[in-house]
Image (cartoon, rainbow, N blue to C red; front, side, top):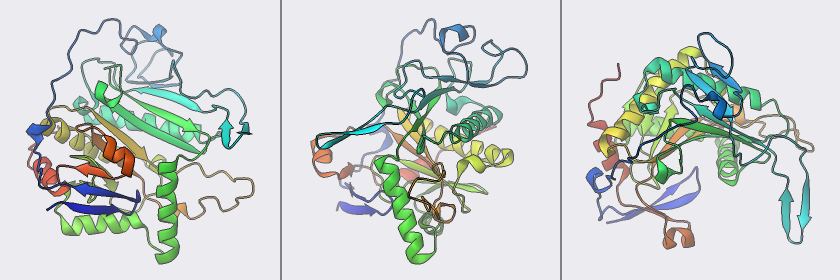
Length: 344
């Protein structure tokens, strides 16, 4: 029988349609093919992108080859960094100037390798680039929240196949993030505990949704997964801010991230996916809000969310806010756990 499951963090219901019981082979899609010429993210094409903001390279001049990871402004940004924040009313609506930042993290110079294919030192370099750019953009008092995400494959929203992720800084807290932050704050005020720590401890104790456990990290299929084979990667110990991780912690995170990506790639034959890094927002003082996210150091817990794009949102989901997941997270965990990987 199907179940309705409540996600206390995202504040929504999910229907786990166990009678449909879809298995990995039911979701496999044809691999994307086609010859790519003159990719702007490849070696030798640095002049075809905006000038780099940050790069990891052993030596050499900016905007030249010999880089390992390269960060550039998005050529067609959703928001622009120039200008001042201005808001105004428009009848019953509110309008705000499109101020923000939109950056692209090019994860490798090799066009034919994706993030899951990179070595652990190479993935660590990518994570160092994430940390560096988050810390830098937080210094701008106009930005309320930073969204770091990766779209893999055209069905996941990526028109360029060269492996990359994106970082967008926005001048307000998005509704999804605001809900999660508020839930964490209210839970802490009531119980003086982090709700994520409770979730992590319960999932490790139960074990049925744990895919892989490392010394400091754990990957699970969420109890109320909205989508088949959805995954979340958590620090096992309380940690509210990804950007405060040291290099040694990033190296272990690289192993956990590669393990998660390789399991998804192997079981589902390289599906399109999105992943999102959820971390603490900037903590600058806000006019009239001296305690803005004041307890976040204690109540929040950063994490990575990965969603394979195997199903489509249709009328029922749009009309109700419910999601229908035809593969239980418990079954998904079994399929993902059974994969044998060599991450060397």
